[in-house]
Amino acid sequence: MTETRFLPLDFIELPPDEMRRRAAEFYAEIRRRRTVRDFSEKPVAREIIEDCLRAAGTAPNGANMQPWHFVVVSDPEVKRRIRIAAEEEEKTFYEERAPQEWLEALAPLGTDWQKPFLETAPYLIAVMAQSYAQLPSGRKVKNYYVQESVGIATGFLITALHHAGLATLTHTPSPMGFLNDILNRPANERPYLLLVVGYPAADACVPDITKKPLEEFVTFI
Ligand code: IYR
Image (cartoon, rainbow, N blue to C red; front, side, top):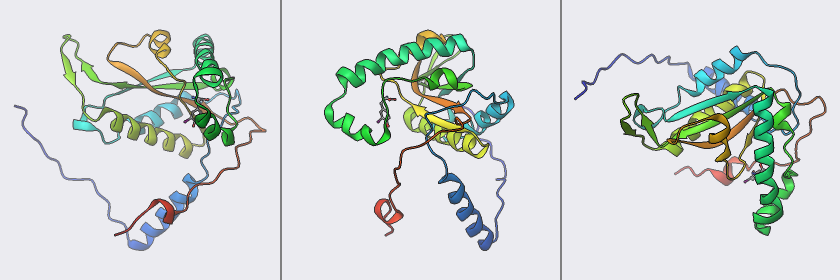
């Protein structure tokens, strides 16, 4: 059995006033994040993306198995192949598969099957979830709480990218199995979502929608 080793926690206790200020400041900053669907072609330094991915990689996760893999796509040809495959799925989703109720729920967002941002934005990050780890020896090791873990890491990533001054779109072409083929990913990985990353287009607009007030989604007991 592996022996458990402990280290002193690197915890910085802040004065309550500073805690209040930081909590309020963070909320003011994160509430400005919007899902963007119109991207500029303006390039973004790879180092910025790398640090945001490092932040994502610190996410709490099941048994510290870190059951994720992020494929960062900037190659125009690969982006083009992803756009073609995604639009094919999305076209049948919007025109055939989507129930009326779902289309009505999407109406306020103004989305349709066309996804030009998959080629315009400088980066597409395919977030992959690993249901098991495949060791170099070929042995399979089970992962735990994979959906929760990858969801939290993705939340960290979106937050880090916003904090760094970038816009994102959480895109979920459905189904997205084509990402395994295009990106050459192994059978232990399933696409979780496709994050579109870059600067918004100069004239980017966002839907006029609101978030629920605290009282509506929180209960203190
Ligand atoms: N995957 C489609 C549809 C879509 C579904 C949900 I739920 C959204 O919040 C937004 C879009 C698309 O990407 O257009």
